Length: 355
Image (tube, rainbow, N blue to C red):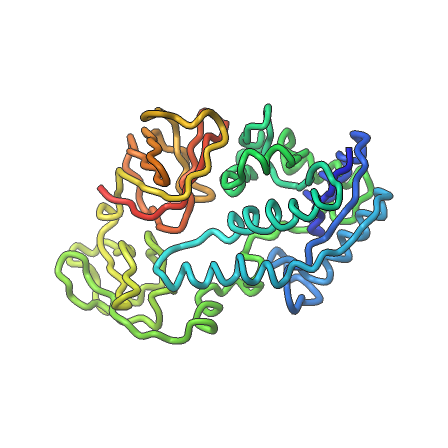
């Protein structure tokens, strides 16, 4: 079986490739060059896709004794991930670029090319499991990445391999050290990979410009402050609002909604953030037959969110979840992922949330 191992230059993808080699597969390593102007060095855990990362991936491939190539995906990444990120914020939504990268780059562009070249599957270092073709949470809940993989179709999952799903991150690092891989202690990348300095608002301002607008109180309509761009806010945000006066009860205010058409950010109490109904579009259902009625399950509404009991129903191109427990800070643009236990049933992109 010929497989293509996507090697980012980190410890997870290196160990995933090593396990594929050990399993007797015919493995070829590939590093995806996603940055048009890659930096020469990372700064701690910030960013990825640097020249250093490419070299680390090549060194790991040399240790494993497998062929290694670099594929230039910078233009595709820019169009499908970075431009999508910018346009989603401009529209008042909060995108998840890791989810979009998995969907558009790693399991669309890369997988399509791999199959065209005669490979049977793509191996990645994601912390998730596949059980009978069904996506499942990792055994390491702190590192579980099933949420950002839930956009994959059944056809894509059938050609994916996630060798790390049965291991904790500590076990992966220990194995890397035992195998003599130099990335054993390399820090994880925790930030948006194309914003290496971590300043998302500054990145968006450089692309969208300064757009002054009002921050208004949801109950009274009173203008409480000004901002330089509604794109710099997300639903549920508390810090960085720079309001001119406190709430009458002295309690903090939170972003409740963002309205790009008039460049307004509306704020209010924490209680006003609570929603019980979440709707999404473009559902992808992979964990079971498409249900013909409501089903009881759990949903996750952000990458590191908690599972929430819900009743989920599919109707055409829409998914609706009635939450058994109200949730706060649900942002349009994120994914709603439905789980049965630790198995992924399906996902959709959140459009609206309300009481």
